[in-house]
Figure 1 (cartoon, one colour):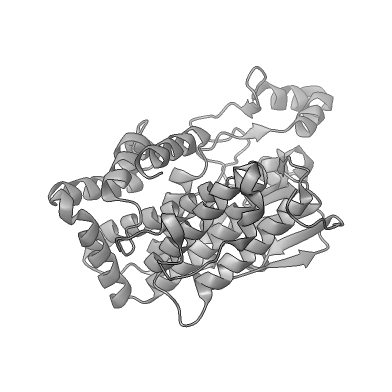
Figure 2 (spheres, rainbow, N blue to C red; figure 1 turned 135 degrees about the vertical axis):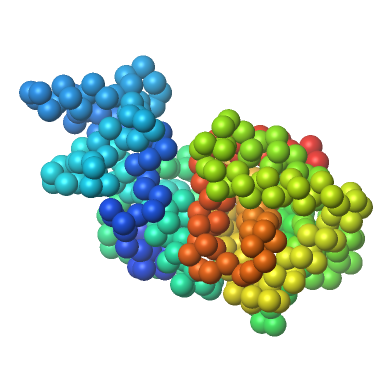
Length: 388
């Protein structure tokens, strides 16, 4: 092991955004009880089995017992315990312990890594996306005395690597926000060269000790063999790569019915991109997004904040498999796709979207990309084939 040993005591850390979150309850425009497959954890299912009488039989009748994990049978695409008041029946009757763990926590994401528990927020909740746009900036994790039931635990006993990983996350976030601020395209290029070089050493035991010697720099001559010579600006991933992802993987399975608003943005994208010469697509995208950020500087702040938040949330996931490069590339990809959808909306309307519309597009992007494991696997395959 190349990383210094460090003893840790189990502690819980909440992202600073958590303090601003407030559920919209029945006023929610995109209720999480609709359109979601609700997994039931074993502890909650044990409670269902112990329920007596008609109510117990009623609850159990809606559970698909042969599925793994067990899930509720949805009624017209909605959780069977979603009331006409747009609230959860279990909450309304004071039986919150009967809500599946994911429902009790959502939109909080509770992850344990070694002796550390981190709590952040998922942007697939409209209350979170709206609140995020009101509190842009780097954010941080702060120690908390609250107790949480972790929904996801990362299995690895290499605590020293976790300490190294958390230190790297801090370094990357500081780099993103360092003054004078670098353009996001430059940030992505520098981080790619830095993390890919680290990844190369980390995957080879004979040279793992070189990981800590890699320098995070803007100087392409010092970035080594993974320095990107061309300057694509905000178009880190080629348009051909994004096109394959959008048309082959994101636009799938009756998207017109599942998410008609996202479907319309993708149709606008298809019309705009099909008119462009292939050799001009990246430059066109960079020019258009840059123009949008100049017209509305809050967009640049939003993209920087979103990327920073994704790094904070995704980077520690490398604790499971040491694949830091994967977490970085997905963070860049999500921001670039958000840019694409923002741009399509702007080109269609001819005006800068208000905060509610920006929050809606961010919500659509997150729901489309980050809650489907098979889609994530497919996007990673495209990244491997066309980028790595």
